[in-house]
Length: 75
Image 1 (tube, one colour):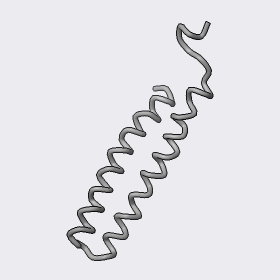
Image 2 (image 1 turned 90 degrees about the horizontal axis):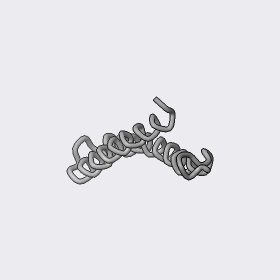
Image 3 (image 1 turned 45 degrees about the horizontal axis):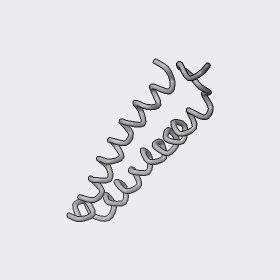
């Protein structure tokens, strides 16, 4: 598997994980389950996929500019 394809798939799965963690954070903060400690832990846990999403997103954004032209338009 090509590296860029791996990054694309990872970016998609990271976005799903980030969305699930944000929804869990909202539910925990609204309901008050687990107290402040759990709310803080879940809130900080959302930063991990967010940082990875930022890195992979910047890579995917820069990919067309760094890779040059490919395909029929590369004449």
